[in-house]
Figure 1: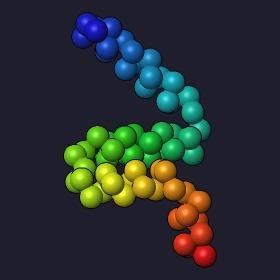
Figure 2: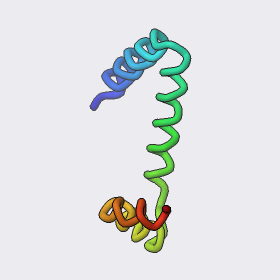
Figure 3: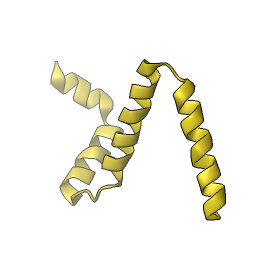
Length: 65
């Protein structure tokens, strides 16, 4: 993607965000922070925990009772 295309897309996204209510803007910020954290390198242990949680939500719910 060319730099001018990316800049145009970013400007469009910023304009759309500016039209959202403050609560929804906060949600978007939280989502962006979550994406950044997910992109950070995870240890194999944390990756295994995430995988286990994704595959066994019912077991975790029962253990939490």
